Length: 50
Picture 1 (tube, rainbow, N blue to C red):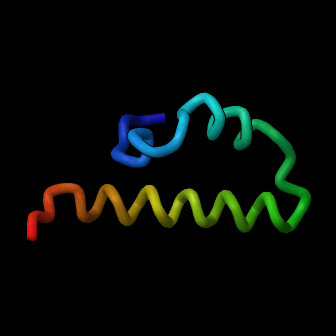
Picture 2 (picture 1 turned 180 degrees about the vertical axis):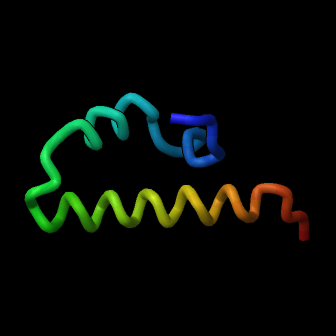
């Protein structure tokens, strides 16, 4: 996975092993959706300064 500000918060290895697992359970796919949404949000607002 490419570098991203999300990995300042979440361990990259944990996400990689999570993604390699089965997404058959609905809760896993919801968790993956939340991770991707957070990743995109942080990347979009990376340079924002109040």
